[in-house]
Length: 293
Ligand code: GH3
Ligand code: MG
Ligand code: MG
Ligand code: MG
Ligand code: MG
Image 1 (cartoon, rainbow, N blue to C red):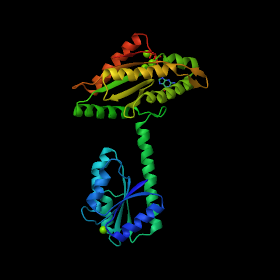
Image 2 (image 1 turned 30 degrees about the horizontal axis):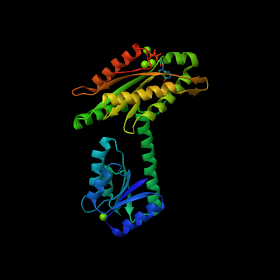
Image 3 (image 1 turned 120 degrees about the horizontal axis):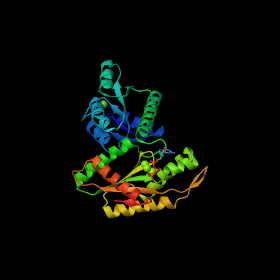
Image 4 (image 1 turned 180 degrees about the horizontal axis):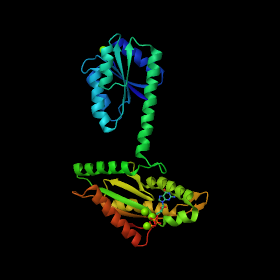
């Protein structure tokens, strides 16, 4: 885990850095408040920070306030331990009020700091687990419907901004009710998990896949034309139809149908999904194991 150390006193800084390294943390060290905020606001920023109360540039409390006001609103959770000087009870109250998670009084006891850091790590781990379950589907571990909508609205905004192409595909397992009726729901669940693993194999790292509902999946393909999307989705279709899915009830073969829609302003997210849904209906109508636009 990466930890930001923001401390202008050189001796304390060196001591903090060597202790944290010894305890197995990666460290980023700065001695200026503005620099600290810059690091905490960039992508891939440390999620744990030890920040001095008084520093040139920006005070520790101002950094806390900014982290809470800006980063937290964007869903980025960072745990901040404020370093304060002995005997200033009022500072502690102000620091916690500004958004610090905890504080350590200087000169600090190294064991106490080590434990306070591990409390922070425990809370961050818990927070990451909660964030994962809130945005992922339990059965397949793909993005859930809610997270898919978030990603889709982000991709629509990007397509508008960059005037770039964007494709959406809605996938539905063919005759899946028959699979459940024949092999039971447990085997049906195994099939859904296998499909969830299979779909991303044909996609690029920046494509988005999620579970839309029951036996329906969504694929968001940014930056591709209709023809390119068709090629990608047809590989998915082909790959799934060729896959022998092993379950306790035996080997099961399934096929999918998909409907695609191409984004063009001023379409809304609902317009895009409805268009893909209509195309999916045509794929079902056309005999299934088919991709339609
Ligand atoms: P079509 O080709 O027209 O899509 O036929 P279908 O049988 O797949 O469609 P239908 O909508 O009639 O049935 C969908 C089935 O998917 C019924 C439902 O029980 C099953 N299903 C939905 N969610 C789950 C799930 O989480 N696990 C299992 N095992 N089955 C599910
Ligand atoms: Mg200082
Ligand atoms: Mg369905
Ligand atoms: Mg179906
Ligand atoms: Mg149906």
